[in-house]
Amino acid sequence: VDEQSGKPISKASIFINNTSLAVLTNDKGEFALDGIAPGFVELVIYRDGYKLFKSSIRIQVDKAFKLNLKLANDDSPKAGKPKQDAEYKSNLQWFERALLGEDDNAISCRITYPKNFSISRTGDLLEVSSAEPLVVENNSLGYKVTCYLQEFKAEVENITFAGALKFDTHT
Image (cartoon, rainbow, N blue to C red):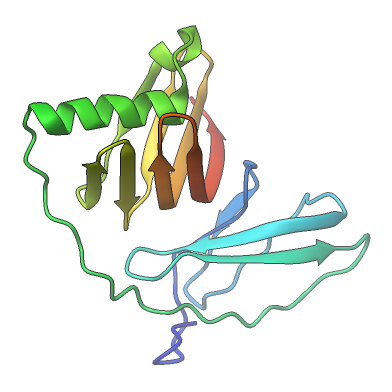
């Protein structure tokens, strides 16, 4: 439900981080997610206009849970379309190498960037953020990864990533 209004949020994406287990909420904000192996998993909820919700939950055999979750509005400023000059293109290439690597599989990937994508560089520090997910597709391997990027920092020897990943087979 919406944290401020208490109204249900329909069509929110619910998934287990780093898996393909995913559903959408119905008009009442309800969902059922089956097929999760017992143990600790990270539940992720995303809906445009809200902050990404992540919580570790423990799945037990033959136990169902009723969760009452509240999503907070995302009031962060939205980045405009960046100026796509030579520096931007260089920074984008650095980001793609840091995110995907440089092997043959990386070369086969295509990234779809959202309109609210921000990339900046100060010296050897590259910082990337996005209020909306970006999508990485690899047609030769047959998958699509939706990347919910909360924080991404790349330096020459170090990469920091915070967010969530949802995997899908490509049809």
